[in-house]
Amino acid sequence: MSVAEFLRQRAVEVTVSGSYSLPRWYDCEGKLRTFACRTKRVSPFRMIVDVPVVGKIGERVTSYFQDFGEFQCTISATLKSGFLMELDMTRARRAWMSEKLTWLEKKQKDANVQELRNDARFVPQVSHTFLTLADGSIHPCFIIDVSTAGVAISCEYDPPVGTALAVGACVGRVIRKFDNGFAVKFAVKQQRDDLVRLIVRSPLQQSA
Image (cartoon, rainbow, N blue to C red; front, side, top):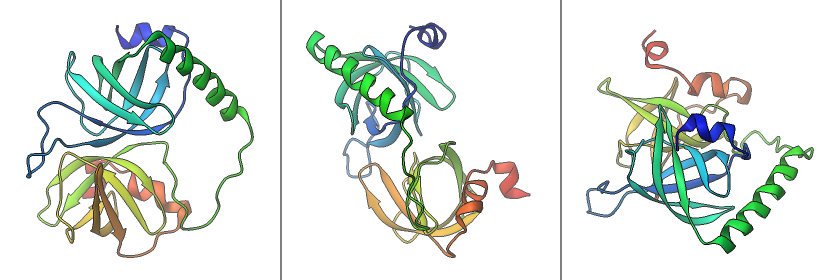
């Protein structure tokens, strides 16, 4: 199915964090790599996800989402920073998925109390930015979440702990690795009001 066709179908615009793996993507130890992702539009049959590494049409994907569980999927269409996945599941699980989506849609319409602590992590509306390394090389990356003290990143590039780099215009250092990516601690704590503007920048803005 094409993205245009899916956009005409009944589905829920919902943001749910998850992870996924693509065939033939391995780390230096020969283990299958996993990347972070987030849903953008979901139905009981398919979903659009925002991702750091876009697979190819026809590829099989294993994905996991905290609100939905694990899926075996097939990529049916690609976008610049994401893809459309066809979900393989039983009729019973599709019925459960439909009920879950109805509940999430209602939950979205409720007034939620936002966490206002300065160091609270949040998910920016724009998921993609760029890393700049000390040698000047630039790598596109996916923002998992961010706080005034640091940011969690998923990226095709896999830096070792201790690597100095800039996420957008915020300079920091890799302090921890985890299954889907790595954590960067900023050299200087940022102001929350300026954070998204500084982190989400294009390569042209970074070189300006």
